[in-house]
Each structure stands twice: as structure tokens, then as C-alpha cells.
Length: 440
Image (tube, rainbow, N blue to C red; front, side):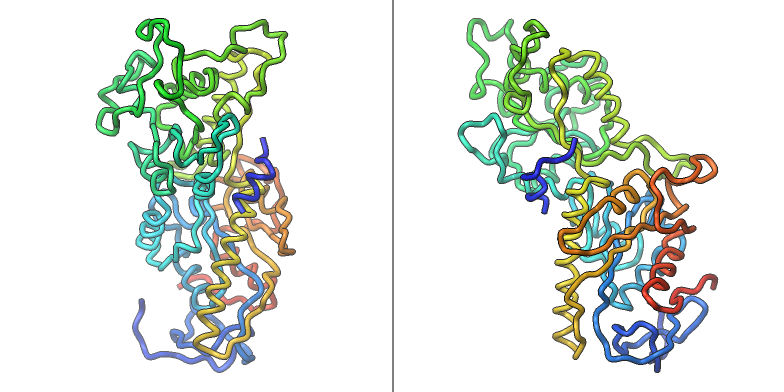
């Protein structure tokens, strides 16, 4: 389902003698030292007073810049050329599982290109803006940062630490629950999770041990929101826990909501008022890894969970959930806001060190990706509130395989071999002669 309007608003090295080009085909480029021209360096043709371009790029990472942790050929050269030309770009990925700062350091090392944190967005980055919101069922108005949430996905407890760094103070992960109550899913050994488990903030409700005491949010573990931060590693355990929480009474684990045991013809209380909100960080069915075929992603887990929910939940209990990440419009809006902020800082840095005249309006953004169902669909559908036009470039270096998939389901502006060729095409569209030359 689409995010609500309020949610959309919240998501709002070489060494040689320096070569100074005499002419430049890109009118915004100041006369800065470059390497002597070669078949891979920047070609120049006309000299015009420097200014900042009114277009920018948004790059997916997996399948565009990297395949797992291995750089795709010419990706580094492409980013370095754009930085030399002072053309703004951001990295917009549906990946995640690490804190943004850690991932930026890792990318900068893998690509040997300095990536500023302001130019990076991963799938769960917008979740940080939810710390100040309140759960729909919470009458106290307490910020979600102060409530207990369940975070799943990723390796070990990395996603817990990411959520805590975002500002959530009480974060439970599946390892905590299976360690505290092993019989909640008997097919997983608690020993597999013990290294990452922490004590639960409150015990899990159990009618056999609670006597006549009714379940209470103050006395029993209560989950106020569920976040799938990254691809789940134990699908079975996570599926069971999501079912238990979403079918519970007010998120109190170990209980069952009254509407789940009543006549299914009765109209239940709306789920969003009695159940914790459920968030998925991206809908990617497939992603590009080291394997020669794409692998299942978080979107596959979502599809699986929807099937289980349809088979288990009462017919009068539709599942309500929010999915962000590409191709959601909320993520593209968040990305454009981040791109504008990053570009504005570039303008300030340049204007303080030269007489460059900035282009105030961002006219066009080229979205370069490998997944027609996320990068291309999202870029094609996005309507910018700032008046920017988004065009899409599909590369063959990742998920998309024309021989196996046929023509892309969502049509890009162009299909190219890799990011190098895609940027060269876009620069040509902007009136520049090809700046990036193939071959050594």
C-alpha cells in the first residue's frame, strides 16, 4: 500500500604534470587542473565562464556500481569524472542493513571514490524521521522513539544498532524473543541467535503463568511498531513473529486480538487502530549479487508473508502495511530533497572559492539503475514538487537480462551496457560532446 500523506511529508590518484584545458564543452566547468587527455579522460571544446549545471544524477548501487562488494568496471571512473566536472549525484539504493555512515565509508573504500554522507540514501534511511511520530493506537502521544519496536532483517543485530542510532531507544529483534521463549518457534535453535540476543524489556504474556492477571502493556512485552529494515535471514521465524504480533491484542505478544476469534462476518475494529504499524524498507523481489542469476530480496519475503497472512488471518482482517524504498514516491521525494541539499552545499562551496554563478533550479535528474521494477518504474512515475524532470537509464550490468526477461516492463529513456555508457548518453543529451571515452 502507498504511504499516507503524513508519512510522505515526514519522509520529505594518478600523478603527472597538471593539464589545464583551454576549452570546455560543459559551460559550468571552471578551469581546474585535469590529467592530460587520453582515451579515458575528459574531452574539451569551448571556454565559457564557469557555473553549476542544472542537472544531476541518482545512481543505484547493486548492479550499477557494485556487484556484491566488487566494483563494476568503469564505475569508479564515472564517479570521479562527475566529481571533476562538479556535476551533483546521489547514491539511492534499496540495500541496507548497516548504518548510513558505515556504509558510506565502505563504499568510499570499495570504489576508491570519496562519497559524502549527504549524497547517500539507503532503503531504511527515511525510518529515522519516524522517531518523533506516535503509534495510531497510543492515546498518550508518546513519541515512537520512547516505545518498544521490533526490528527484523540483516545480519546479527546490525539493524538494531542502526535503529538505535536513528533514535529508537527500545529495540527488540527476533533473537531476543526466540532466546527468551524458545517454544515460540520450535524449528530454530536459540543457540543460533544467542550471541546477538539481549534481555527483553518485559516478559512475554503467557496465560498459563499469568494466572487471572489480564495482559497489560505495562507488565508484558508490547510491540508498538514493526520494521523490516533489511532482507530477513530466518524467514520462518520472522514470519511467525510478525503473525503473532499483528494478530495480537494491541501488540501485546502472546495475546490474540478479540476480532480474530469472533464471527468473521462481524466488522472488526480497524487494524491500524489496534495493531502496530508494519513497515517494509523496500519491495525488491530480486537483487544482483555475486551469483550469475539474481537472488530473492525483501520483496520476496513480503510476497511470502502476504500469502501466509491470506491463509491464516480471518477474512475480515486485511493486512495494512507501508512499503518505502524505490519505486515508492515517498522515497523519490526524500531522495530529491537530499539531492537538493547536497547540491546547495556544492554551490556554497564553489561560490566561496570562485566566481561561479550557480544555476538555482535543478531542471533534470537522471536515474540510473538496473531494476525496471524499482529504479525505472519509480523514476518514470515520480512527479517532482520542485518542477524537476526525471529521466531513467537502465543498465545491463545488474538484475536486468533482456535475453531472459525480454523487453523491460517499464520503459526507460535508454538501455545501455553500464553506468559509464549511461552517463555518457546523458551528458550528450545536455549538449555536451561525449566526455567519457571507452577503452584504455
